[in-house]
Amino acid sequence: MSTETAPDPIASAASPAAATALVAKIFGVGTAGVRLLERMRQGEFEGAKLVAVDTEAAAVGAVAAFAEALLLETRPLRGLGTGGDPERGRAAAEENLQKLKDACRGVDIVCIVAGLGGGSGTGISPVLAQVARESGALTLAFALLPFDCEGNRRLRQAREGLEALRAAADGVICLPCQKLFGVVGENASVVEAFAAVSHVWLDGLRGVWRLVARPGLIPIHFGELSALLRGRHADSCFATAEAAGTTRSRDVIEKLFAHPLLDGGAGLREADAALVSLLGGPDLTMVEVHRVMEQISEQCPRAQIVMGAAVDETHRERLAVTLIATRPCPTPKTEPARARPARNPSSRSDNATLEFDSDFLHPVETPRPPARLVPPAPPLSAEEREQLLARTAAREAAGRKRAPRMRQTQLPLEIVSKGRFDRTEPTVHQGEDLDLPTFLRRGVKLN
Image 1 (cartoon, rainbow, N blue to C red):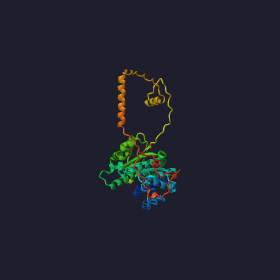
Image 2 (image 1 turned 90 degrees about the horizontal axis):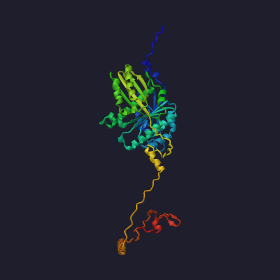
Image 3 (image 1 turned 180 degrees about the vertical axis):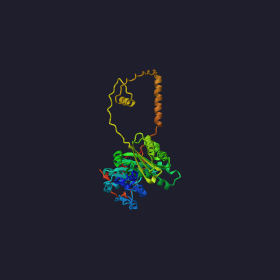
Image 4 (image 1 turned 135 degrees about the vertical axis):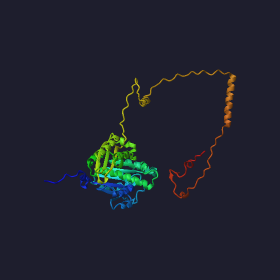
């Protein structure tokens, strides 16, 4: 008689052997991206290969102990950075294109974390995203936008880099630092503000990694995620929240919808796809899961929702939710030119613009107004006619006396020496010295 017992589903789901064999790489691009990799050493990213990409040798050298260092060095840069110029960063990526292709070969999912507004992150990230997509990897980018106080130059470069990144990656999760003032507080120091930004940024990346790589009771398969995001060039927003206690399901929803990155729920109402990751302890109940998903479904009426749930012993009496809402990037549509309908004289169009254009192209001739009859001047006697002529001659004579006499004079201009060009050979064309002004060569007198 066999004494074997059925395997525990929770234990098997939490075991490392249940993890999917995904080949994933997280690329930290530029100064901000490389610094985030340093905070990820103690995070929940087991199984992911970290790659630091930068044009500064000192930056990639600082993380070479735990991450793959990829220095994009060119002859003008010489490992000293781009000086905040995105074009130099793009040129460095294009010159080292083979290095990027080798780093993306055989990878299933590529996550790019970069701060936009500078030179390396803004210029390299779109090129890396394009290379990753061409290699067949699902490409997701986490873009950090600068604070408004960092200057309009960085803001403009960040917007341009974000548009290029959206056109290259499968999905872009944007994190504007300016929206996090409600999180860090007005009295927070500069160090605390940037630390809070890194914390929120890392939470979003951790939630995505938990969706695709962490084993769970309700896993999200990589093929399902790829079918949802691949080729859509989606613009995404995300939020994370965590609560504990008996009312954790209600509290986590309140914190989630109050997150500043959701813009008061506008990003959820416009979303056409939503990814939800739940992480709780063994005491997580189905009622709590149902309550959370019901609230999210009401806020995302048009979205296709994909949910994943994982159980971790360390999250007993706690519940963490990560929500990623995606919407397609707006693209300008050009409508084909439509033929103008023929004008019907018997009927008028209700469209004022079309009516104006038709009248302009086909003017309607209107009859000229009748001329007015002007009565003739009364007849003058011979004496009156002589007096009128005398007054007219007197006015003309007075006008000639008052009119100043115009005389043509020459301005007191003197020829200035050519200085150090006196000994140079003059420019002579058809016998004329073109180095002299035209009015002097042609003898023109100026008034």
